[in-house]
Image (cartoon, rainbow, N blue to C red; front, top):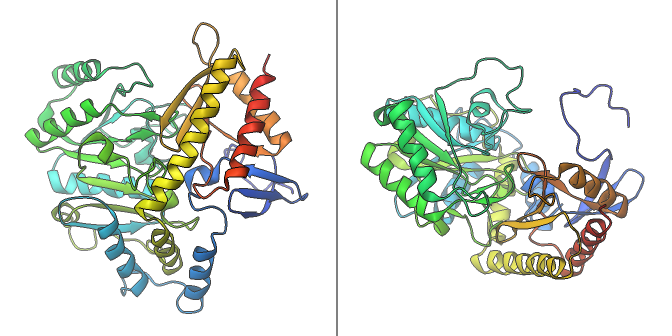
Length: 416
C-alpha cells in the first residue's frame, strides 16, 4: 500500500502491511503468514484478537463507546480501577488514574511527583526508555534518534549508569556514580523522584540489580524522594509474575502501566500511594479519552485471564524453551556472533556481538531480514540495536513457539 501520506519520521522495522492476526500469528495483505515474536512491542501478552477481549469490546461497543470520565464517571473506568487496586501487589492503600499510553502515564507521574514533593529534579538511568513525548524524551537514557533536533527538553533530569549483571555495572559502581552526582551536579534535597525500569525494554532486556534497588529505596525514604517503577513493558506477566518489582525486594511509590494492560486497546495507568495521587488540585489530572470505556472493558477481560497460575505457567514455559535453545546454540557453537541471553522470565533478549565483545548490529539486521523472509517477525533492541527482543504472546501455542525458535536458529546459523 502507498505510504506517501505517512510521516517519514516514523521508522518502520518490517516493510510489510498486516491484514489480520490470531494469537501469535499474523498475516499480511498478500496472505503470507508470520509467527509474531514482536507482539505489538509487548502489547499482546494475551495474543492477537484474544476471544475474551474481543467479546468484551463488542459488548461494550453496544452500550457506551465513549465518555470523558472527568465530565461524568462511567462504570467501566470505576470497575477497572477497583480491579487494578486488587491486582497490583502493594501493601499500602493505592489510587490511580487511567491514561491513553505509557508515555502519558510517565508524564502524569512527573506531575504527581512535582506536586507531592514541591521539587523538580528527576534522576533516570542510562539505556532507559519512557516514551516519545517531550518530557519523557528527557528521561530516556539515549539520544539517537529520540532527542535529536527537538531542542531544549523539560528538566532538570540527570542520568546514572544502570546496574545489572547484563550491563556489567555493579551496585557499588552505580552507588558511587550517585554519590558523585549529589556531590557535583545537584543536591539530594532538590530531587523529586527516581524513575527506573525493573527490566529495561528498549535498552535490551537488562535486569536491574536487586541490591541497588534496595539501596535506592532506603535513600528515597531518607530524603523524601519518590521511587517510580516503569513496568509498561515488563508488567502483566512478561517476567512470569504480575510485575517484576517484587523480584527486587522493594515497593515503588508510583507504578507506570500500559502495553499489555488492555489486549491491544490504547490504555495506560499511573497507580501508587493514595496520598500522592491526591497531591494536585482538582482538575490537575485527567484527559478526554483517558480510560475510554472500550479500553476499560478490554482491560477487565485481560485481567480476568491473568491469574498467578496462568502467568507463571505461560512465563515458565516460554522462558524454558528460549533458555534451552540458547544453551544448545552455545554448546554446539551455532554462531560466532551469539552472545548472552539477557532478561528475566519470558522477557528475553539474544545478544549478537563480535569476537572482541563489541555489538554486531549489522548481523542483527541480517537476522531480522532473513527471519521475516522465512515467516518470523523479530524486533531489535539495545543501545547499538544488537539485541534481538523476544516478545511472543505468553499464550503462544508450544508448537508455534518451537517453529519460531527454529527459524531464529536457522538465521543465526547462516550469519557470516
